[in-house]
Amino acid sequence: MRVGYLQFCPRFGEVEGNLGRVLSLLGEKEAHLWVLPELFSTGYQFVSRAEVRELAEPVPDGPTTQALTSWAQERGCYIAYGLAELAGEKLYNSAALVGPEGLLFLYRKAHLFYREKEFFTPGDTPFGVVNVKGVPVGLMVCFDHLFPEAARTLALKGAQIIAHPANLVLPGVAQLTMRVRALENRVFTVTANRIGEESRAGERLKFTGQSQIVSPHGEVLASSGEEAEEAVTVEIDPAAALDKDITFLNNLFSDRRVDLYELCGGKGE
Ligand code: ACM
Image (cartoon, rainbow, N blue to C red; front, side, top):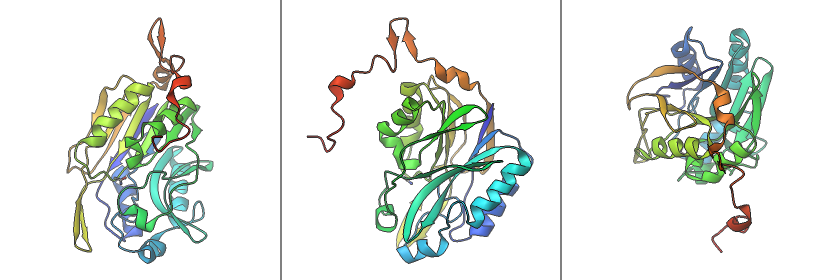
């Protein structure tokens, strides 16, 4: 299976233009599964809910999802991407996965980062896994990387690949954590980050690029620099993610001591 990411610089507010740029950067390159950045069509740095409301789209009926579905149908491929979702009166920072059969999965970002909390509703969709050409694929978005439960849940639900649309701003952090998420869950991860800067309402954000594809052993199979706009693909064998044995006496999943973790209460009590 060939998986790939597109790293690029969306222009704030230019939804049609950003979609056009994505399709032209992907060009004739081929992958079975593509991953695009978080909020790829709108840009990131909203300054009000009204502004998100203006640019957000319903899924699957909005134009961005419709266009990517048609593109996936023409190519016979799958594409995971982040967008601002309008659902009734609610606004979510969402990721969708579409293929020739239409929308396969919609995930609404659970762990909102920084000012996203002012503009978006926290996600209400469970972490889930869908079949892409017979391979279970899970979705998480950007800051979810710092909450190991997200990737663990996806892995326990059978994900062999985690698609991770991102707009990362903390230098070097997710590039490290996603290697660990891959290693500790024995899954492939595909992080599609954006590049460039946004400077709105007096605050400047620099996006860190360095998108990457990581193997179940934590090896970086492909990565980009901090400035490049590029589509990068790697051929992987997703079955490598099925082997959770660390030694012949240790298994990543069956050795878990769920009796000691006491996770349900949360909040550290
Ligand atoms: C992030 O979650 N966009 C940092």
